[in-house]
Amino acid sequence: MRLFIEPDRALWPFIARRVNRDDSELNWRVADIMKQVEEGGDAALNKLIMEIEGAVPGKLKVTPEEFEAAADNLPDELKEAIQDAASRIRAFHEKQLPGETSWDDGNGIVCRRRFLPIRRVGLYIPGGTAPLLSTVLMLGVPSGIAGCPERIICTPPYKDGSVAPAILYTARLCGITDVFKVGGAQAVAAMAYGTGTIAKVDKIFGPGNRYVLKAKKLASREGTAVDMPAGPSEVMVIADDTADARFVASDLLSQAEHGTDSQVILVCRNLRFANAVQEEIRRQKALLPRENTIDAALKDSRIVVMENPDEQIELADFYAPEHLILAVRDPELAASKVTAAGSIFLGNYAPESAGDYASGTNHILPTMGSAGVWSGLGVENFMHAITYQSISPEGLSRIGKTVITMAEAEGLEAHANAVRLRLEEKAE
Image 1 (cartoon, rainbow, N blue to C red):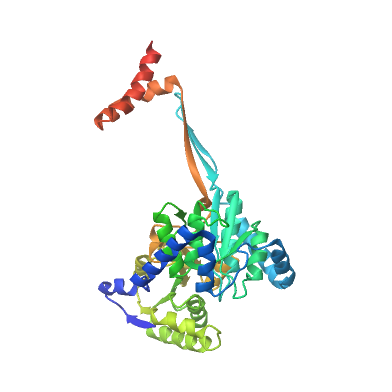
Image 2: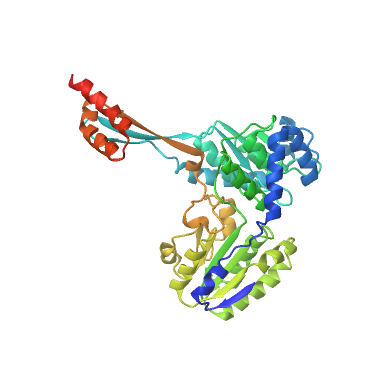
């Protein structure tokens, strides 16, 4: 981890620079994958699955028998944990369901705004070395609360063509039975264009590696909506003298193990604490199974020693982290000053991993500095709003002159005439 001591503001852009591996080769490769799937459908998709994922899925869609086997083979302890997490996530997200709003001007004009579920959504669940069953909950629960009538999941299969049992169990718990054995950019392409077996969706959700992110960007340019820039993972920890170096190190490591392009940043007040955290990282890392992945992520990570707590918050806003942990004496006060973060964890006993699994908040969060303008995933992301206006003849008389005057000022005479004709008829 690169160390910065009281860095000048001119260095802040360097400190906040993310891992950038979005190179021309990646761009070409993803564009080629998207084109193959768009033009070749299922045949191209199966070819890419074997070529890229090294798997032979047989049937792309998971069968009812596979769902049953997954439920039978999953340990009861894990099932109970999934059910507990699901209930907490559901309880928090049910509070987010938007209602209808209306306004009556009292003169014959009534305006309403109503939310409706998106008809068909595609949920991408990362798999492979770390099948993210938790992401099934984070996407499956709110999409169910929103009432999306059609929901599909795409997730990478194992080499033998099977899907992680925990993913299948969690999907069925969320009421989703259309699960397809495909991952990576090819999965995004399948959901964006449709392939025959996999129908085109209206909006794609879910985190992923840089190939998945690039594919989502390309899909969005061609008319398929996507949720947000979600990935690679990142965390910033702000710590003072009340923080525990062991806890802080564990939080940094928990994000670093996500992938080689993850990024972690520690902001603390003195070099002594920085050294203590680095020593804890070395000690704890040696006991973890994903040490190589962590090492790669730590190469692009930072430790910043900065004594002024207000400047620490300013740096956090400048970075706009996906996850922000405030391991400080008064975390509520510190949080009240933050304006750019995906999700904030308050105090020494709020680890980021709690939010990843079972606190109740969503772990699909904006990354790459977008947390100042994007929000974390919620029920409303699976819905769209329609506005309505009911206007009586008297109501149109009330605003008619205003509309005509403004339309004429813009040179849009047909707009003005659409009102003028109605007012003239009423006058007759």
